Length: 472
Image: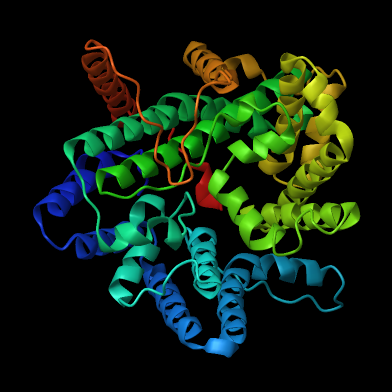
């Protein structure tokens, strides 16, 4: 079940909110609803989710009580978390690599990838490390901790919510009409991003990529990458906004996850704005512990390279993701070596155009089925081509509604907020609102209702509704 589905919008979410607001056992209702939500798509992996919760709960208490042996306990706990992730997500990939050199190839394990495993494993690792660092007390109640691990708004696609960010709200939270309204607005913004923009450009993106680069003209290749670039932004940012909005409706402050990343003026800035909860996780739990930028230029470059190789692998067990991570890591090294300073001296439009170009080129690897296909598509993009003997007519893949969604999505994504404007803080709380003219509240209500009606009509009509991050 995904948020942008009829079953979630008209059945699951209303029923859950009614029970949540009416019954006194808030954490119990949230845990039960979360397990039902997860079981809707992956019932066989519910025991794995609960086993992960039990593992981290036990090791959290053990670390808090271990004294001088805390580091050893932490090492075992983190190792077990990563072992689960490695087995479920990378066993097939590693077997394929071994088979390249083995005389007698091994049989592939055929392991299915549990939904959301990358997210809830990283949650567990951050919890154990934070308990070890003394940044948060170990949770004494297993059921409260299981609720944190399983809460459905962020379970399968983030943002990656660290326990320390919501520790106080696990025990006590308040919900009033103003916060529910704020959460509803953010949820509707995310729903509109997902349904009206991401879904609209997903069909031409999938059609063009599915045709294969050998059948695409240069114009078709660029349109394919442009559509995918808009799709992945609004697919994931929309889902994150819906998750954060539901969080507000039930009293949680989830961290922000996107801040207009395509408006960035460098790749360094892009990664401060894209998938913020993931990039900050790698910074706090890998890059800084490795030494960050404190041990000289060479060590800094090595740390950056390792972090982004692992970031690529986090997204998927394939060479395309490794190349994507290496692409970003390598460019970040170049920026740190001096390009970043040069970009700051350029006119803003040129710096933004450079950043958008290198990000889009990276998306080619992220989306392509394999590295040779990605390289072929890149060649078509830069070497004029008419599509060969059997050209794909990309004009048929993108009609007026898709062009409209692409144009609106691009305009909103590329707009750079004025320098004086503030962004959400690390807790997800927005800056204090300015006094609102009396006409704005009914106007916002009309926009929310209008967006909901349009999204509902689109979903009821059975329009194309994929979700990219189920792959990860």
